[in-house]
Image (cartoon, rainbow, N blue to C red; front, top):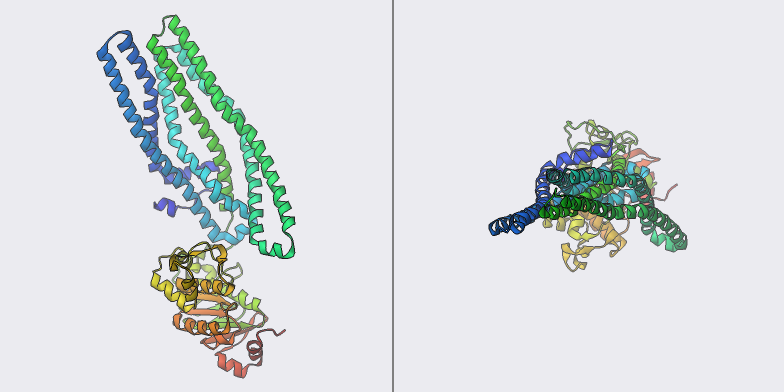
Length: 568
């Protein structure tokens, strides 16, 4: 796929018009191709009535077989041009739709990835989900219709010129009547746009409610709260239905107008042309051509109204997308030109902890939340992180560079639906041998064997088909397969049995040898394999050293590790 789609520059967030032009600049080649073939296609269609009229007058009325054959061949040639240009135009239209829609998903995904926490605080989940299900289609639809819209304008001008050359009166009817029709249609557009925006808001709230309900379904069943949420969902569904009914009235009026008004227009044009024939101003062939023009004019007028309708939907959809893109990251931009030594020591001024580079370090605390907070600061998961890697503060680096350097894996890592290979590789180009080694190091080979298709086996959403221990080991395997410079693990073995935990500790020390690895744990089965241990008390580092030395010399450490961390 094109780089302008996979890696587009930052879009403007000022107005929908600027957002539209931004996308058009990035796909100008396919838009230009669609324009050329769209104009050629509709212009060829517009010339068919002209060729038929000339054939009638020159061939049938004048009883000239050669002229009739000549105009018949011209009609065949026009038909061939219509078929070829129509097919190519359609290809460009589909390509334009795909580029516009997929680019919208890419920039939204980029925003959610880099500013996810802040977006979650300001925008309902349903609005974000709707971008990939509804809004991207509406944004792509404008680029799809562009070629036909340009063809409609050009063909309208061509028909108007032909009409004026044959009959000024009828030509003026066409030139004046078409803008009047569009003016009448514009009376419906503003109210329709407002009601579509209202429906979009209500639909987003319903999606958010449904997402929250599904995520907490087991808890709801446990506390007997299903009826309450069913009632809320039903009530919000009625709000969406009511908003849809309000939209439907104006949408129906617009759809009916697209048929009624052009139909009236055809009647007026034909009636005017018939009077011109009776007065001798037009020939029989020209009258037939006029009828063909009038019938054809319905097509470009419908295309124009379709473009107007899609533009309305585009404005609503682009407004939603830009509301996501406007949210600023809670992480500073950082300096991209700094050279970082990934094997350097990590230091956390907030706790006073120092993590030696290239070694397996454990963080131990009687309060698990203190260890988790330190782990979060090491990965710069919050705005308050002052952790430094060597002499460089992580806060001074671009957040994407930090994410490439440091990977934080919590015990409840989310699993997504897809194949096991996709689950473990997370979009990276990781070969199967590396994935299998990661599964072995996490002692999760049993999960692989349980799937009939191995790495191609299907993983259900949230890993519902696996036990808690299997899900945790898959999350650990995924983190090991990523092979980051700095790996931070929060309670990576809290859901596995002691025998497996000891094995994971040994393989973790071996597989991560020479790479900086931090484990937040109080398990002796893991601690015995570490190179270094940092002991926290009330969020501050009070001791450090090897596990065996701390067990022997530090009573607080000994109490936490040997009693399971329940000291307070």
